[in-house]
Length: 441
Ligand code: SF4
Image (cartoon, rainbow, N blue to C red; front, side, top):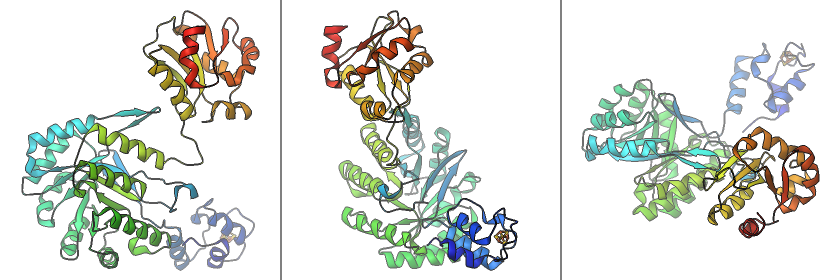
């Protein structure tokens, strides 16, 4: 649990020497509690106090980072149970599982397709995060090499210590995740993880055993642990994941680690997708899928984005000039704000009606049209600035811009801001845009 300012003060020298830049130790302690200064600013803290302060500053859920050739997947460092309390920080990494028995050629083909998969959603590019390779009797080394030939994303290696060991030297310099230590094999798995500076997943049939196991493995010198909750039954997994998060936030260190979910173990593709969605919503740090299919991955990526967005900041689209249905220079120019729901409402209506158009999305700090207008974030000046900044005049032959009906009041001012442009007032609701375009433009 984080220490209060007073508790921190009791650990400081209390000489008020001012060398830290603050007039008193108490003032420094308050800043430290608010995480606005570094402890190193005080040169007189005892080693014992430093240790206590470092422990209190450690996040309740350890940050575990898998690395490969500049690519990283981070999990942990979360500080709340519900995203509306603050926010969730590190999106769970989505990994695709491959089995060594599939053979190097088949693996290379699958990896190439999954690695190349990209999807753009409200101006953001999404992709999968890594691959899991399972030693299931095939040639693990060849399987890992086949993955590496097509992808530089982080890896999870699944198997026993003796089968994983030969594949690890080729991954020197990377931080893979080894899956998994259990009550029987933990010593060998811990030794292997330590030798290769890998993270280690730990599994047990219940949470008590899991907590005992993480402590033993930590004592062996492996710090980066990931918890497998020992069940693929949805209700049980949800209950355990919630218990683990609650206990971790109460600073129960043995369970203060990110969680992994092997969604493919749930059964068929439908169950796999439900398990993965639940794991995204309820606290997984790494999710391993057996199925790579855009229709499965895309909704999961979007769900993940929605849950791991700061709830205090609306989801925004990138301001810019959007082309809908390949517009030509004669086609209409419409204006809206960069609140994602507003953008989609407008873009979907225009696109669905088959209307080619240019859509100027203004930076209104993620607010809808009326809210932004009321807050002074969507006015004639901003609209004119966007039209100029995105070089709209160079793309169109007819200098005519349609503004939302809700801000009809801006038309006069906008004429002054955009001399030479015709300002038209469109409908208030996006659903009425197709009829407006057909009748009025
Ligand atoms: S440098 Fe340390 S001892 Fe001096 S005032 Fe700051 S906190 Fe107190």
